[in-house]
Image (cartoon, rainbow, N blue to C red; front, side, top):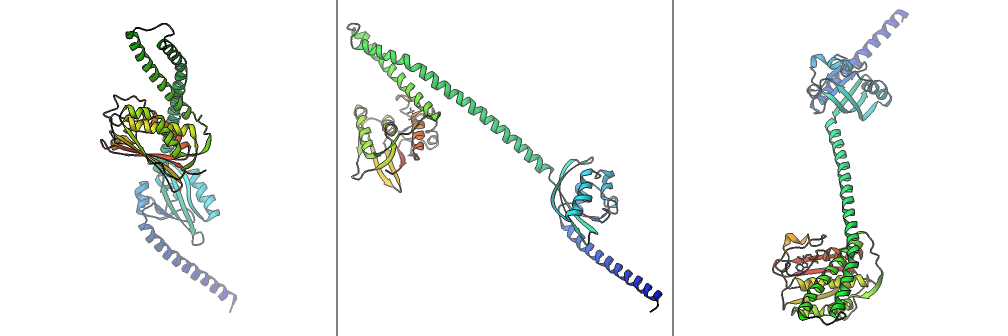
Length: 395
Ligand code: ADP
């Protein structure tokens, strides 16, 4: 073969190879184009010189450009050069050639026709870098929503802290005011007692009656102050439990005994079937005793005269469960969630005539929670109530 024939053959082979390559490219282009048409996200195919080979309908719709002004143009020239931004150049000319394949690369473009847009670009260089497949996802709204929700969250946290601050100030005020009120109220009690005992001479009947009213009101005042101080201590986290192992059925028995005069006065009876076995739990006995008294006092207060209160204690699944069942006025379902909130007195047919601050159950729940237990109620209006106090069993 002469040199000339050899050269011609080589040229011919090269041409055939190029033609084959072009045919291959064309067929992959048709293939990509067909897929692209079905994608709802804007999608564009660029050639090695960053000229648009084709774009899908979503691209034209989204970026408000026409097919005839897009195909064959460099990506940067689209929409009167609005795509010509340093960020897009950086992405297409430096980042993508290095990585070949990129997902969710975020850029922000100021597109005069559409405004400021934040977009996630996902791209692939295919067919030996001769084509770039580029998907664009507009996440502007998502980012704005995220930003808004972050701002809202910050605002809510700020408001919550502000409210917490107000609530703390209120708690401090109540604690301070109650503390300041306790001393004069205690002095009144001492002097009333002295007068009643005749230290200032014998009192005529009329004055004695008046003194009884003063004494009752003073007792009530001191009770309220003690309630407020007790709750303030619990709210300030100043309750330190001093736990010892106690037989809770004995504690129940003693609490019933200590309130026996109250029940007797109202003609009420308490049924307590003390179990033979011990109901041992690790508790702060002083606080637990006050809890039991509170529960019994409520059962009596919110029940009519001559009714029965039944107290039960049992051990179940590692808990000591004490129930207080009364045949009293009961509580409407919708009021039951309020019972354990601070200062929540629920109105019922007896609440006007019985005294209360709406702090008892709030404090009881705090103390039971501190013991790792819980308190529940089941009740119907007019059908009586059952309060159940649970504390972990153990020695
Ligand atoms: P107080 O008795 O001082 O009002 P509590 O916190 O002890 O406060 O109780 C809150 C409210 O729950 C009471 O006002 C009352 O309406 C209701 N309540 C509590 N115990 C009972 C009960 N055994 N039966 C019916 N209502 C009750």
